[in-house]
Length: 540
Image 1: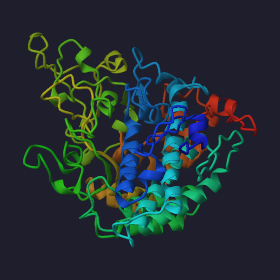
Image 2: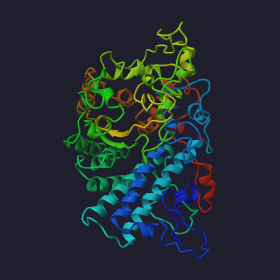
Image 3: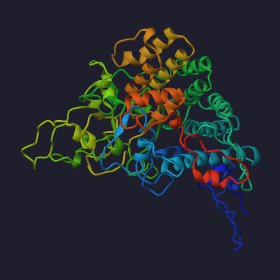
Image 4: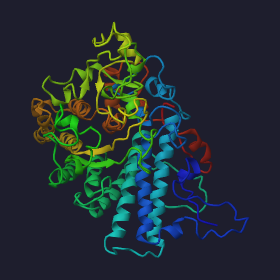
């Protein structure tokens, strides 16, 4: 019988991506040729297979309607945007799986409450399989000096990355760092501070042992700078802002990255601007001239292993459902087939200065013109955006970051086949500003945030303007659609979360409670953990 990973994620959450066990070898078949940790993780090539699996698993966060962990409806990451301070859901025809996260009727059986838990512990289980194999198996390394460290560093990065979701969505969660041979039903909730300490150790190791120079590294693979970026974030959350600033400054001062402030890439000679260039298809990696990306998840249209039309549905979330509005037909220039699941609130639209590059028509589409020649009475005219049209999700002002995805060849193509940037330098600057603010160093915080604003041609701010709300507003201006807003608000705490949702989200303000900063623990986790108490989060 092959070993089966029966840590918390398999016991209570889901299936391993890579390996499965057998309950009884009643056919007496020869399983020596089957893939398992014992016969795969024996050389560098085998571990590369495992690491590629981790990169593939990371991409699963954006999957929808495909029978995997995330399969019940709306793009999963929409659940990390609605019910916060930045976006509304449409009033009619909204996705049934999404509405509970806006009206706060979610419960321990809600779709993404369960699925993010499965996702994270599934990820952790697979990292732990790799880490155990490093200590148990006899391994033939291609590079005996660097390969073991790089493999361990990658696995530990992704373990910390998984726990980012768990602590910010659920609070205290079991720290699992071992592969259990027998099922366990006695897990207890590890205090968040203790989990953060483990995450920091994992990210420090990754920062010390992942490759330094991104130049020769295969696109999409990790470098030490991705680890240091998340280390800065973890230090902030652990209440150590000076160490957070130190980590962020190492990334900023590394010499490998810079804020893009000149045109580059596939459409640099076409109308546009340098901020918009970052979100054009094929412009996410260094080979395009993009010097700002620190880590990008890789997708590729019509390529084996590159994803499919269900891999990333961000377009369906952020692009309006304009094709439902009389006078419109699907068009690449309008973003393809969107569904308008989420729309930014007006306060965000009004927060930009006129000259801010991020506010240009290339980056925020405010004006919509009817494009269906079969409706001549409307064709070419500007849409009058009534409250009803906006609320319907059919046409509304929105970011253009997700106006992409092979729509010229097939306007009805559902997915997004553009590489997904997870970390870029602008966010590192904003983490640095946050760290300095928390360390009561407003002058340094001002300098960090003004670096981002200067690139955008926004007016510089004085140190006296730097506070929690300004940093959160600036993150929304810079990172709308890129950051998972619920994760950010969780880092700022329940009081900030409650205040901002009540002030800025009309759909959620009357139903939100401070306790809703956390999601409930999935009910099957509590029910299956029969040998130890596993209390539910407050408010559920």
